[in-house]
Length: 148
Image 1 (cartoon, one colour):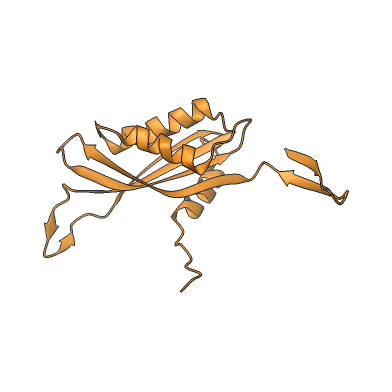
Image 2 (cartoon, one colour; image 1 turned 45 degrees about the horizontal axis):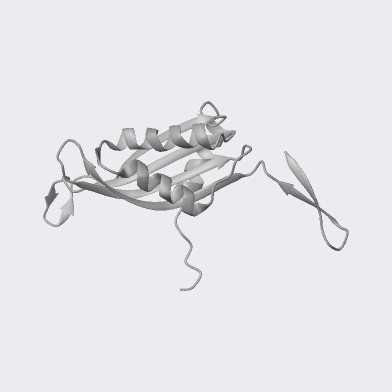
């Protein structure tokens, strides 16, 4: 789905809109409905553009709105995905949530369980293992610090 733009120097520029858009590590805080203790973490959102587009600030507000209140991580993941799927209408969508829990037991200074990860896929990503793998790989890769 390339769009053609005419540059001021009369050159033609092909703008590809079929590449994935990924916003990583949107922070959130919520309350676990099982223990009424906080859980917190990050949300990664990746989508293949449809007709609509949202800014990073708008995606962050959606995550904040979906994280409000007492809930379960799986429901929050689905709520974010369904909202984006219906309002953004992307061709494909992936939501990955990584969270740590205040109710996780700690022994000798180390948590007994690592972060919990939940996933939701919609549109073309729902049944396409290659797109799912690409999203998960990009969302979970280690950040490169270029200022070190």
